[in-house]
Amino acid sequence: MIVVTGATGNVGRVLVESLAKAGERVTAVSRGTMPVVVPGGVRHVVADLAEPETLRPAADGADAMFLLVPGAGAHLAPAGILDVAKAGGVRRIVLLSSQAAGTRPQSVSHAPLRGIEDVVRGSGMAWTILRPGGFHSNVYAWANPIRSARIAAAPFGDVGLPLVDPADIADVAAAVLRDDRHAGRIYELTGPALTTPRERARVLAEALGDPIRFVEQTPEQAREQMLAFMPEPVAEGTLAILGAPLAAEQRISPHVQEVLGRSPRSFEDWARHNIDAFR
Image 1 (spheres, rainbow, N blue to C red):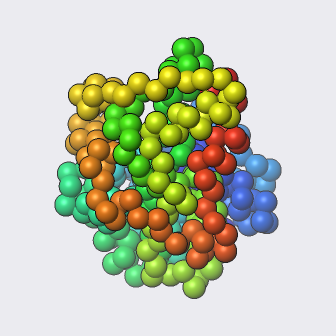
Image 2 (image 1 turned 60 degrees about the vertical axis):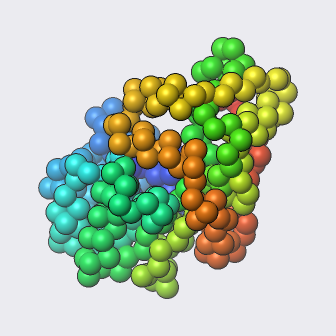
């Protein structure tokens, strides 16, 4: 049995589908009480990682867990989560962390996630840590303005980052959850090339077959927008990466290729596959 937390998100949903299609027994965990549609044969359990005991019904009888923490995880007690997992039989843990937990471990925005990594590494379980950069799917933030006005706005329009397809993260997670050879490894997950916000708007326009006007925001405008859905330290940390990435944050990682035996999907691939969201 493999437990997938965050099972309704961009990564978790694809991971659940992939594991179920491969014939694995899967328990999909989500926080919400709204009805959740899962593939046939998949068990759904409602649990909140902030209350580790609620995870016990999902962990009982499982041998592997994909751990996706909401936000930066500062509100969680990771040792309690892992204790419940181990008591249920889980012996292998795959943590979805962040590239910045490695590149900016002391930052207010990512230090809590680095702390969770440390707890996972010291848990005595077989562990693998995934550190993706930014997601291709972050451009869903443009869906409404593109649909209504053919406008895409972002700060730092010409700063490139190697964003990664969430489906590639899910594919890597599916591989490492089922293979002990990945234990003790930290994988940094990126796309195959740097892309800038301006370039992403152009790619979406080409896939849409309609022009999109790119508007470069000031950092202040972007911060105000971010504060509507993320805490201030996370907004500040995100802006730092977007505007002044470290060399390590612009490096193309070989790890998707190493684990999957294929190149990571490009932003063009993602845009063609998901363009209906912007029509």
